[in-house]
Length: 86
Image (cartoon, rainbow, N blue to C red):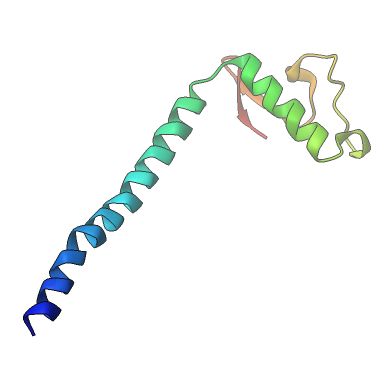
């Protein structure tokens, strides 16, 4: 019986580490997203170009002219020079 109790308690620190890893991972994910949100207008533009290219934007009904500023791209809203709505 002592071995059974000991084996349960010896696994407890591992379980605690696993339980701690989940909220820590979530926190780090939110921190990374927050830092990414502090990017730049150029970063916004590059992300939108990636979106356009990866979703076959050349065949959209309302195509974007990527040679024009983002302000002219259909469906894109900028506030203070940053994309705020798609």
